[in-house]
Length: 157
Image (cartoon, rainbow, N blue to C red; front, side, top):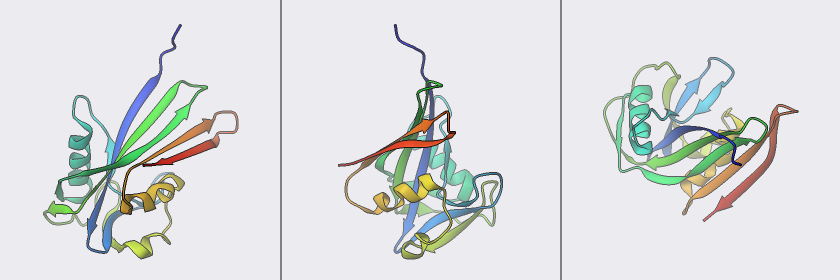
């Protein structure tokens, strides 16, 4: 007998301009730090459509020619939850940056300097893979009893 699994889908789109990337300086709620644009996939849009929409909403830029870089997922066996984040990279965009968005202030940051910025563990863990050849899959198993990350599996292709 199979159990119902609760699936939730998000996207992240790293926007690159030469040696810089676009990040949001997010300083509200419990997810403070620098993050790439992204968010929840709204049914019935595609993952790419969601990534394009989220970048537009959060930065003001219109992106195109997204390259799939990999999956990042959290699984919580105790709750039958699976959260999957589709990760993209693009170097193609038009438009002007917003001064500020609900998610934070959009800022261009040199890639080499971005490694030293405060970021959520999940962003820091996958950050280098956006700039390498191939794709990645990172699975984090949530330890429900300890309310923290448990086993982390990283695969690169």
